Image 1 (tube, one colour):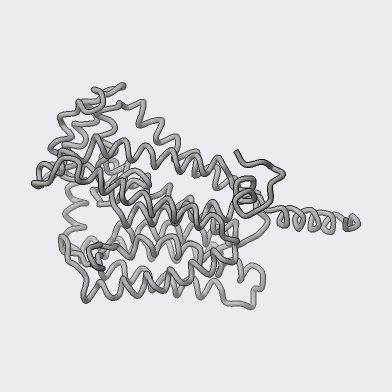
Image 2 (tube, rainbow, N blue to C red):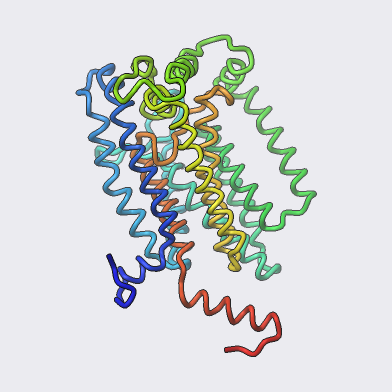
Length: 384
């Protein structure tokens, strides 16, 4: 235990970090690692690998991911902004590179091979995009003559164009929802809400008629016709688990789910640990999001408020999409469950998101002093 009387970077970090957020992130990472033992061996054996291939790789990914989260949590808000700008520039450049030289998987070019690693740049783009847009919105709120909102719209257009070009409609919807939520908090005029809402609906209709895979997934969801093997099997796994599950390692339906260790790990959790366990998992994500929004509501700094709200919304909406697909409440879409699913890019990028949240929610003494001074000045009291 670190004493309160100690001085130094580690002691300051320990006593200023939001330990509830830290515990939630570590808990979700631990649950994800536990579920990798349940979900991945059958997938590995099916494709000719040794049973614990993905478990070992999952453990290997966790080391740099957790180190990244902890390292970023030491940053000040200014350092978070600068890191996000650099990360966004690099991620956008890699997304552009992927369109021409990336690896094509199932008709999409989202991956870049560097040495022996496959990296999905759009995963790292998301937290950086949220932080940079929060900065632009806050600058416009602070000085209306600064065209921060306009720059945020232009940046949003660039990001969406790159995502659609891959194509990755799921990430496009997620990014749009988070950006729209932040813009609304920043005081988006009602006219803009109507216009952007109309453009969003028009974009979805256009995607339905332009991209065959989008039309197929929507049609499958609405009619139940076509190749629905994976979602049907996932539903069967959930039903098989009933309330308390069949027990760790005892699942049978999970063995035939193609993406059991990634997009459908929630179904594996339901089969082996039951519906009650899944409800607890949903409550953890809900509590994380609500705590973040509560912190943002109390935050006096516009940048911190917009950034924290946007980052927890990103985690929350991504979780809703993943769980909704598993429960057949949404059309099938390949999207991981944050901090739970297998995947190096996804795990590391979500830990970047978590690190940003931890850094921006730290209880800094100088920040509290500024808040007290602002309160006294606002209420006509003499400064301390």
